[in-house]
Length: 394
Image 1 (cartoon, rainbow, N blue to C red):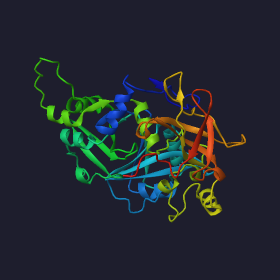
Image 2: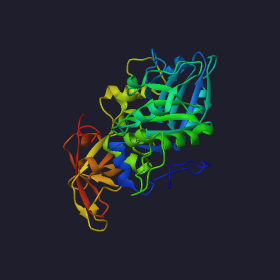
Image 3: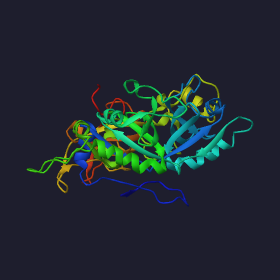
Image 4: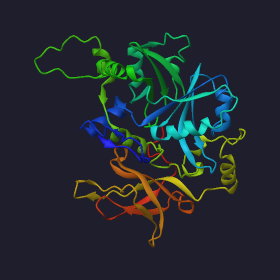
């Protein structure tokens, strides 16, 4: 386990599973097959009422007009200074809208949005204690869900068919006795399926996934026990994984995380993902003046960029040295121009060290040479890339 933060004063300690002890195999399964990851660091706000979408559209940065049920868009919730109070997935369902985000941002988002409800038919509730989050990442994840589920038997339609579950779409499935909301978001560069279910159902859904998807080789000379899911398991090859495997993959994919790569002090233009979260054609919303002023200026003071570093072995660990999280970036001559927010050794690039980093705008141009402190304590040279992703285009 490892602590998850940063926590505000009074917050209960929060931990996530770092790895189940086989990080390389967990990462390989994510890329080639499928992994299931528990996500206690994610929270959910439930918004109900006939006016919920029109209300939210006046509050957050994304355009929600015309958002159809079973669709997901990403958005920021800003404060009056234009700083980011939450980075959310907005998931609309026939009778409710779910706002899925970092659990540490839930309380201030509920309080902040609630202050603006006056006469609208809108109810906003923190559902983080009632709903639980799991994630499936990997090419065989869709096959596994299709094998163990049925369309929801509730009063509402269950959403698109599996073959239409493209990124940005959602479906409600019946797994055992549980209704599970599934949202597709390929955050690690492979099929990504975000599962939301009742807390009371989470353990059973977890067990269903493992029973049907986890493949175990029989011992030599021993006949395998009868298993109705054997063919599914052989194809799926599901593995338990922790935070680290997904973190490596999401850095490779150029997916920044709230509270790590940007946070409550950041402006949308500084995140590298503003185009995916902010509409410049919609009406007013909280913090819009700041966003519009920054957009009119042409660029922010700093930007999130991807940096690929030289490969140099660290004799202390027998692996390439990687930039230290939080270490400053310098240009030739020694001037500090930014800082590393996330770093890893990228298996898809032959274990080359890569990082997401925030740098002054004038040094965000692709090809800019910078240096950071490596894990061996020595300077490590890197080059700013075009875009955040380090994966080859598909």
